[in-house]
Amino acid sequence: MWLGPTILYQERKDDYESNRLPVEAFVEPARRLLRDVTVDDLRLSGSGIRAKLHPPSELFADFLIRRDRNNPAVVQAAGIDSPGLTSCLAVGNLVATIVADT
Image (cartoon, rainbow, N blue to C red):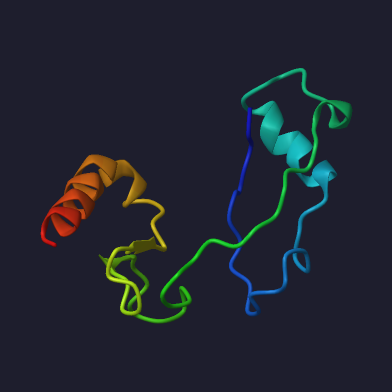
């Protein structure tokens, strides 16, 4: 089971760890869901980069779905988190339409 947050915006794209919460910070919040959880039950998850067009501090912070400018055989789908993930069938249909329009 994953307990979050699962995303933290960083200023630099090579910065995976600077504001990472220690595993101990998750014990009390986790106990709201799992009464008997202890720090020994918890493990830190991996770190990575989620592609975003704009940082959340900007007015526009959405996702991108379009053909790649340099390689038209590739459809780029970047920055898709919620609501994009909850709209995955519509996103899939849009990608299929883009692919079919060759």
